[in-house]
Image 1 (cartoon, one colour):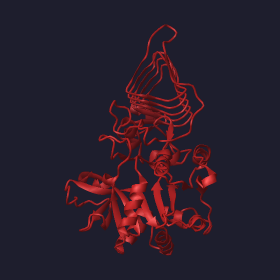
Image 2 (spheres, rainbow, N blue to C red; image 1 turned 120 degrees about the horizontal axis):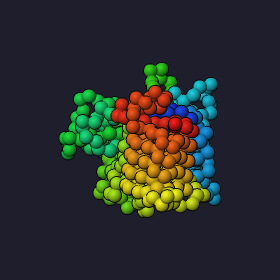
Image 3 (cartoon, rainbow, N blue to C red; image 1 turned 45 degrees about the vertical axis):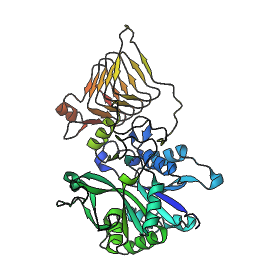
Image 4 (cartoon, helix red, strand yellow; image 1 turned 180 degrees about the vertical axis):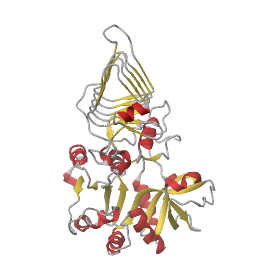
Length: 411
């Protein structure tokens, strides 16, 4: 049998409203993550590591920095017709934006008609995880189903946060797909767990094309992959589930083997960074057998020095990106992006700093996220007083995380 031709689509057109103000000037998949990366780098790295080399990224809102990142970073050899191409909304079906993720594919069917794949892999652009899609593709082909949904086991108490998959007598077949159920049914083999959709799918190409064409004609559809397309396949008895527990990623440890996080809110974005910085991280960036790729910055190494008075600083349980300079400062449980500068006597605790943030002498940043080029003036503070932060126009979440937008000077 000839090998199947596989084509990958990354859905990167969402607004990311719940990540404001980090998405005030950029698409959600372009939000910096873990110092060196953008959120989309995790999806693209998983696809490339899985051997998928024809990939399109469907973009829409505030896509300039995302388009630039994809074009400058994700360059593959054209000799083998390998590529990662950013495809903005083109209004091929009328003067309208994408009405949903399924509509994004409907409006981009020319891409499938050009490449003529046998199999289409569709993934989200803003989840943090590792996964070998080649194993899921093999399982999809073996199942004979038209669609396969990737799922991760989650505690039944969290079922109301996910699209939940209920399996048939055959545990690889989907009996029902329920969005955020209040009365979830646990797995027969593990009653305290449910299967939550990861937002990753494998389709037979002809069946995907037929499904989105049918969906596009429905006035009552939200034109969503999870909300409309998957239930369509389930109703036909033609949907399989791929439990992530079956996936073996090279270099994975028992601690991070089945890590998956949707960083769709400020709280989850913050918590995902905290997952990175312990001595035994819940998600390990340092797995060289399944690397996460990103732009290679032309920057010097990070530097840690005494201040002008000879005072030493301390950096504990933190990630510090290239180009950063820490001079007699204290940094703890934090992630610092490229070219961060932390000056004498400053303190940064439980915080995330994006590119080129400067923390002045004696300043304090605690439980905060600072977007790129934020300057905290000498002696100023962020995150110590939620009411004061809100009065200054900063975003403060219900759990007390302060977010300062791009380029703000904090006095």
